[in-house]
Length: 86
Image (cartoon, rainbow, N blue to C red; front, side):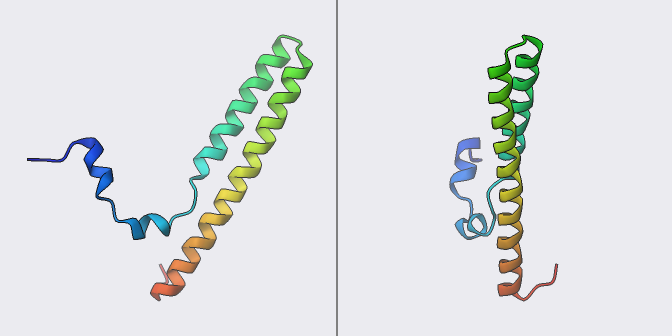
């Protein structure tokens, strides 16, 4: 008998998960959402909506850069502890 899709994630190794950083795709998605809101606000001449979209896009870009940096730092630390140079 095979595991269902929900059961496959339950048996994941927790040590490997802690060595990964936060997913940068979250920041990229928030940035794209902000750009979309900016486009809608600009097309409708809604300047406050455009400004709100700009804030969302900038926060998304900042979180993307932060998540990439955190992931790189965690990966470097794990490689140093394991002695690998991959």
